[in-house]
Length: 383
Ligand SMILES: [Fe+2]
Image 1: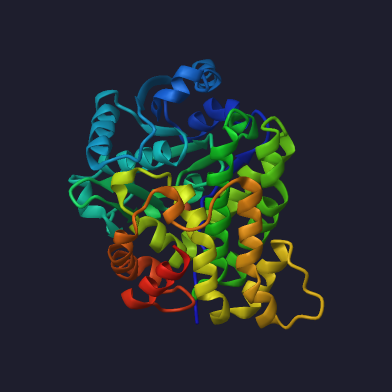
Image 2: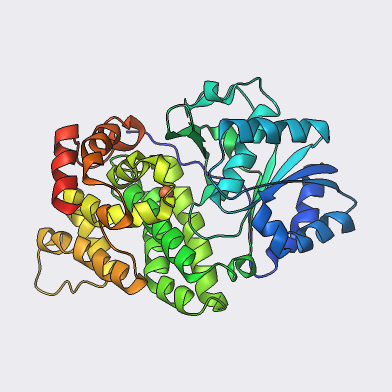
């Protein structure tokens, strides 16, 4: 079997790395940029050192700030129009996954005709996009290194993804200092999203030695650092571990896609506007229970990373403990497992199961196949 491992070409990382942005823009040959960010980032002034760096390098900039909710197709169109209007030769995404995904979708539309819905799916973007530099301020989505942009489609009340190699950023700037203001709850939920990215990529049927390497390291860093990052947001060592882990996980799952946990989380009713990371964390133990005997060696490693004692246990026995290890971690972080605890009604179970089973991008290479009936039974048991 022949595989490809692809990732972005350049990652600048370390405290203060975001202040290098002017250099990086110039190295790409751009002199006018659009900065895509959120109103919260602008209010807090997080963008100020980035703007100062651009100005120091003579780069003209325009700001496009929107709310922090998931971007919609109309956000992407508005953002692309702003990029064309200011003659942006490069788009900088600054913020959480929503800002970065909006920047990536706008980079598609700045070069290619809309509507953006034409590109929902895998490999449908016809050619190179406006170059992007992505600077995350949360440690979770890994969007800065992935080839994926997730938009909320209000027509179908669901999330849709554009997956294309043309979405890779030219540079990701990973600056742990930008993440210190993230509150503990968001640190916990986005951090668990990153852990699940690494885990679902690690157990994926398309996993390789290359994806295993980044995913195992991502899981170790998160399991070791997430509690400290939540307890003391100014712990720059823990913040760096979380930020780098989230990028490592992004490098992994960009090459494999996610699995059943994301299928369930993304099938939850969008009308409740529950944070993606919270849904993923809440669905993690049930997804692990569903999968663990389909890839026992790998789940045995995951169980060890989650602090389960391997002494005297077979891989299958250890694998079956992985979900318990996850529940302990969630308890430490104050996250209730299951969907019912987060306001989702039991009446939604059938719909969630049907939508999750139909999410082919996520379910096709999950270690265990699942029909809507299988997932309904799983959801009923762990709701
Ligand atoms: Fe995710």
